[in-house]
Length: 276
Image (cartoon, rainbow, N blue to C red):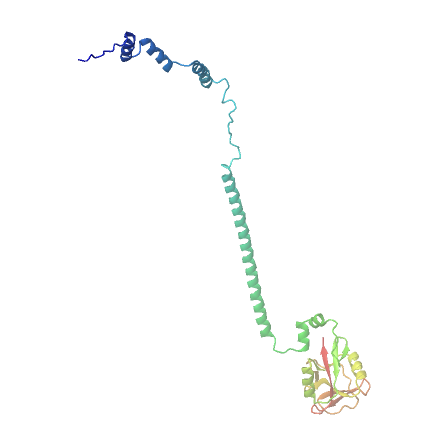
């Protein structure tokens, strides 16, 4: 039979194992807890410093509101501008309204005056057309239109081939026609057969011509009249006038007595007169 060896462990080792099984001692556990939970010296210094920081925040030494700026609205803030704009707008509208009213009133007055003037001119035209015949005598034209030719013609000279005396132009023809034909020819030139209204005209025509010329003198039955319906006032008949109803100026005779009578159907030279 074999012998079994029984190993006997030392008591100290056994005791340590028992203690290990039972757990750490209270002193060791306390030390471990202090190491785990206990504050370190430097941490404690920070915690001791923190109360001062919180104290400064809770009770600051400086007044943080001392430099607060308070905004005071300006008296001329935009809140009051709408009221001023409205007043300005109303004033502008009132001014424009008054201006439009004045312009409208002016237009109405001018229209009324224009209408009145047009009516007056129309009535005057009707009266004139009803009073005057289509053609008028020389004297009537002079009365109705005084100085019209002098204003429009001014210093205008007579046309080529015409002679100027005062305010009249005279044309001495170089061909012969009857008295009526001569008058028509002068009318086509804008004039009429010559009217000798003064000694000056009589002398002037006598000197300028050297032939026998029809003048605007005709027998109306009982008296001699000029082409412009003026009665004969001063005459220059020769001592032995011939028979006839139309007058001729014989420039070869003296100016004092060089008118002769002739038949209106005879052919002769003629003198036209144009007044301006």
